[in-house]
Image 1 (cartoon, rainbow, N blue to C red):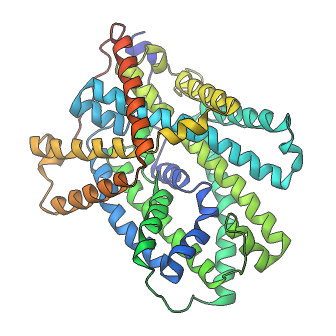
Image 2 (image 1 turned 120 degrees about the horizontal axis):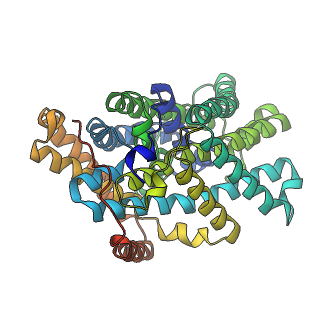
Image 3 (image 1 turned 180 degrees about the horizontal axis):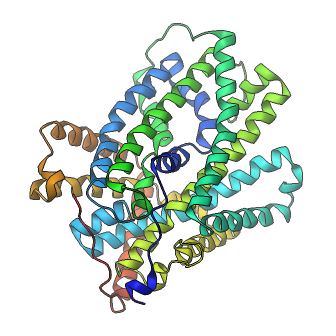
Length: 435
């Protein structure tokens, strides 16, 4: 299949769409459990902890943001690793990111159906539950295939439906109870768990970089979207945490703190409101994943790391339909089999691997002086990269040893796949450095 036969998707994602992808990738199911966990660990200090972590995380986000100004193709971390370290490392990074998302998306569809079943018990039946899971995966896959603009439009609707109840609850809670009282530092032993919780909450805030090949003016649009999304997510988390801290509910269920808060402020209507918000939140989070993650497979197909069929673009919908459908099918198989739980445990360390690869890629590009962007990086980048390295090392050290060993095993599987497929690989589209 030649490059002309493969086709190229249109650049349909603007600044608003890129921000929407980032925000929905970061805000999924976790936001509905996070306030109680942070309050338990840090009390009224939690909002300040969120702001402090966001400032440190901005350095890590800055590394990815700077890399996005140097490339205009889809792939994100996989593309950066391939350009700097070669095809083998590029393949491994893509393998880690995609495989991690296979497991994560499968697990989240089960969470989504659990919320649906809590409101509508018919979805929780022995037969109805797996049928609902597979149906939702099929629907999400279809929404991603039939057009990027349509998928972004669906995310706008879902985001409005999930944020409106949350903002209403937080605003009413603060108006009714005022700001929380005195702030006291948490015990040192609790800081580690608090930081890990916040780190999880910010994960995904720059994921729009993966779909750079379908973004308008990607070298500026995605850069801006990362920092604007980080600011929005930080403000939202702080607002919710302030409201929860001011409306502490005795003996509230820590698994559903926002629902407990909704019940305290609005009665049963509040529980229903937050439950619906959770459904839309997880659904838009899943849709964001289905829009961007298959673009890694698509980019690898175009550049010869995967069979050319993955680079196919639907003439009718102008989307990489084969990559999206393949992604949806694997997620559905994992969700139906239940094996995703063990796979997700194996991949705890995978995110740190592609983060570390991206940091190293930026350092090497800077040392090479490759392109005008790398040449223009000033002394402040020593501090930015240093903070990013320290944060990444610290997060990596929190990875359980069994997860690290299992991830090494997964890397071995990826190596075997690369070696087996090497005879059939071809030279495809080259990585394009535009810095």
